[in-house]
Length: 199
Image (cartoon, rainbow, N blue to C red; front, side):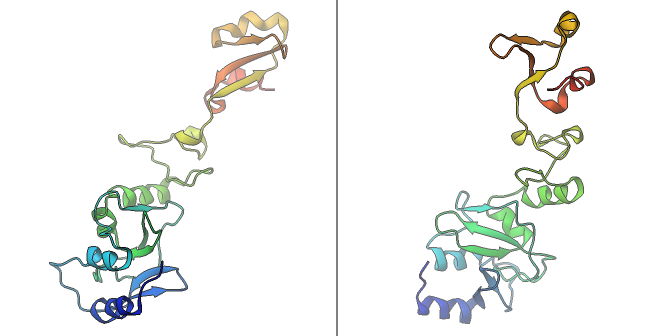
């Protein structure tokens, strides 16, 4: 996004905000912070034309867990680490602390990252794995994969004809074209007896 020199000067002189080429993100170097005023909305409006604190104007990426630094774009020097917050329409990136991530409409992001550090991240999509509470998205038995990445599919089995009736209790079916037995489900949830028969 093209930002005029006039706005860049204003960002630097008024807020000590600059574009960090190395991190490809807007960050704040230093400056006096007033606990009662959060300047994230003002700064992001100067850069993108929109206040990123309004819900729906930003997004976060679970692939990017945290950045070095302690001064948020809002000026708060109390952060233990910074996170990448993106403007939805321009993809401009801002290095912000946990409070500003929540204020921008991502209340669970920091807790999810903490869960990911404890439980791991999905092997396929890199989302943090959450094993408890109403936002649970995986189980330990899923071997590091979240619910969204698990595949409900037709699993083919090597069942000898003489044992076909024994396995019908598991919902096995016969595929006439392929001449194979199969069952619908998730591989990690199959009973051990069927797991041994996977083709």
